[in-house]
Image (cartoon, rainbow, N blue to C red; front, side):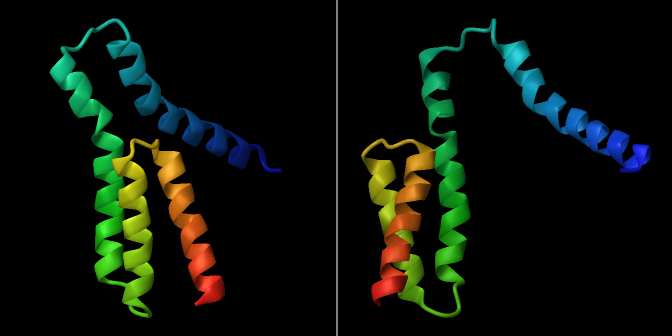
Length: 101
């Protein structure tokens, strides 16, 4: 492997790691009020919704496929599942749906 490519990969890793680690280090000693803690707990679900909803409406092949995936994700999120579980539930249900329908 060329050493220039190696250092380029290392540099890209450092550049992407710093913005992820910096807020963690800065805000680790800061205690937020309960209101802001609750707001920040909902950020992953809001992000997931922002990713899913446009896909449901702009799917070209089968609108029902997108609707089933979104419904599964919304139900799993409603019951308080973490984001990883919400995504995995949607994938499992859509795999079942595409296999049998």
